[in-house]
Length: 525
Image (cartoon, rainbow, N blue to C red):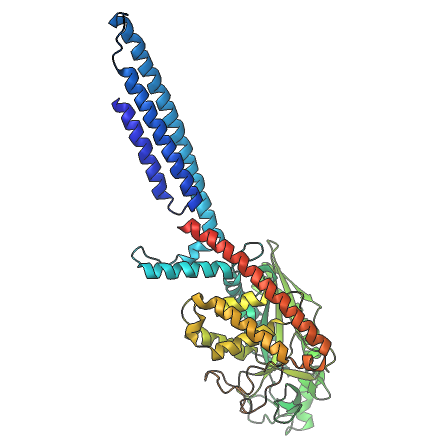
């Protein structure tokens, strides 16, 4: 009997221990386990009562000595049965606990719960626990994808640093090879756009890393920006870059194209110059610059140590930039696009070749590029908003539902920048992300209806001081990014219809994320 009671207590203790180990089980699973434990307790009580009844003395006409042997055999038989049942139940419960532990672990991994739980302590009060639960739920919504993948931006940011390091190494090789020429000086690359700002809407393998390479005029030359005026009080969006000779008499071991004699210049006349190779009628030609750089990269790639790990291919998809594809020995691919720009004074604004350049625009026309200023703006916001802010996740989520529409990522980005500049920073905490998503959609719909969305850096008096803009930017009338809707009523109607599609996609994604977050939160309880 002592052994029987011990087994009964052991079984109950094991059930209680299993419950403690798996406090994260959902309510339905917990209820089933409680019912199973009750049934096991009832069955155990019945067996013990049966054994107690059979162990009592049996009074009959049969001699006591003949009655004792069947009782002993019965007790032995029931003890063996009880041992077998208990052992089977223990094995079954052990397997069930292992499976549930694995299931909880996999669920946490899929929905990023391990990442969310970093920094939590058992001593947190109930208010903090409620706040963390809300953040977990919101994060599950924001990180939800159609294929239930984690938010890919962290991996993208890590890879972007590797890409920039590779491009800097490549530019260093090119600078050495161009040191004795009269061709543009290649400055250090600047990582721009979503992949470097932390909100890329694409999966990691589909990201194109954009880098801007500033061009500086070679010794003896200068770049002169000639704005193309488009309207009264309106800052020019397009400019031409005229290449002119400059006095270089004060330079060491350098001839001056303006003041040295023709006889002295004969020995450098055969060297390639920016005017001869990269200009059309004395204006810097973006297509010639792109072709020149592509040829340089093709010839210089094998001099890099990375050439042993990656195969490089120049893709012929752009005439105004250099689009490269790197393929590792393991088969993974990385795409990067190198843009070229000329800095406007000492500001953060460049005249640049953009990937979406209008094919009808002459190749000697360069467009204002504010990608460097935008990157500085997002870094400024990151220092101001609360820790764990949702502004990048909101931007990522809104731009990831634009596929198949004419509404560009830059339109959404501009809307978010305007809201970041006008909404108090405390309003971008993770708990308010649904409200901020609603603000983004509301502001976008208002802009589409009114056919008006101002360029962010022009005519904007509320600008962080660390962002350096040309003097005339704040006083200039900002261009309308939705000007094409004013001129084309059919395009306006289509844009409003596509907005409804975008809004439906976003709501559907939020619904999926909310359902998933509820399942994840029950697992964590």
